[in-house]
Length: 90
Image (cartoon, rainbow, N blue to C red):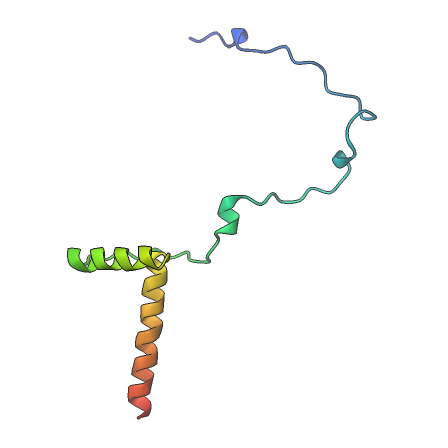
């Protein structure tokens, strides 16, 4: 079994409260990390099989327009719904 006593470090005691910076009395705020900045609200997973040519074209289109694959699909679906609504209203 490993001997963890060798790994223990001798740290100095913490500073007295009077020596501690004033931010200890400030309210805690949630830190902003990269993941929280990229929140999209997408929570459902969608998996499907497509032809290789379609997948390649989709990836190239998304990359050249700096979009995610899901953004291309969402835009495509919105355009399809708009096109269908024009057909039914005519």
